[in-house]
Image 1: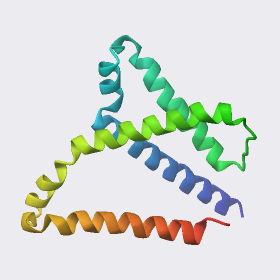
Image 2: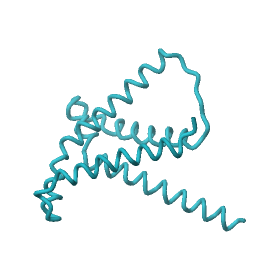
Image 3: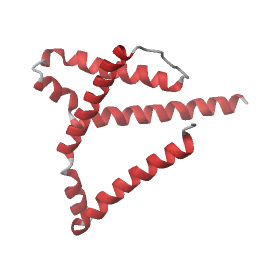
Amino acid sequence: MTIKIVFMAFVGLAGGLAVGSGFVAFLTVLGIIPRLTQLTKTMKMIHYFEGAVVAGALIFGWFSLRDTTFSLSPLILIPIGLGSGIFTGMLAAALTEVLNVFPILAKRIGIDDRIIYLLMAIVFGKVLGSLFHWIYFVDQ
């Protein structure tokens, strides 16, 4: 029984490190934080931005592991939703700048004349993965 618990803890920690590293690498490659500080002319405060991203990932990662519910006023939820929307919008804007990766990838693997298939595979994979998650894992 102890070996099973140690193994599960190891797998959970390894999975968390992999996802966290991927998230940090994703933000680093897109350059969201330096670009945001550049646009807002707050380069001296870049450490605060980085700390906010790390704190947000840690806090909400912890909340996702717990069965935590909050009974908050809609007035408090409005700024939280606004902040989430701004982050998602900035992430989407950063992704549009990186979309030139697909033509380069298609040319490298030799399917430059069929790039639409590459994009459709990504879209359908995302849709089917999301549907599978919502149908199979989410209790209603």
